Length: 194
Image 1 (tube, one colour):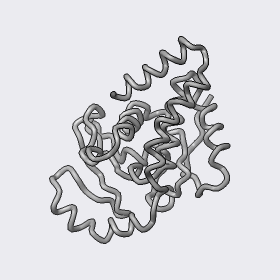
Image 2: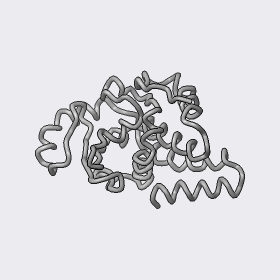
Image 3: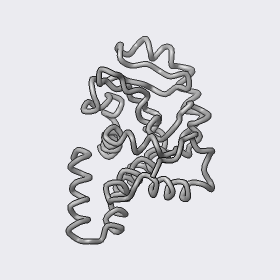
């Protein structure tokens, strides 16, 4: 099921049943199932990827590279074409990646609390999934979020709340409140206006 069908499926249920909080929790539970499989961002994984990054870069095709921190980056022609590094991941993870690509403005106003601001130079939650939007419409995806449940949770929760009618400012307040304690330093993300 693709992102638009999945989100629309739950949005229709929300509107028809009139219980958006309950339905949001169901959708978040779906994403949480995948996320529970993953661990939080791991310095060991990043270190291991950095150690082998040069070798892997030469073995992969032209559109794949490793960032200095070990994250795999892959270019596709548009947001409609997901990166190949998602092929062996659960379908729900691909759904989150697709949702992120379609909600750039929203997720550029949401911080990430996994420590990636310092470890990977990320400015916001969007950066955990997408490294670059090129002027020709092509996308350079980042696999950082495939190994980080915090990144996935923040993106999934933000998109669900937005689809349920919350403003970016309201969502930001919810995210900041939820992750302010017990998580790493947030990315330096400006608050949304209005």
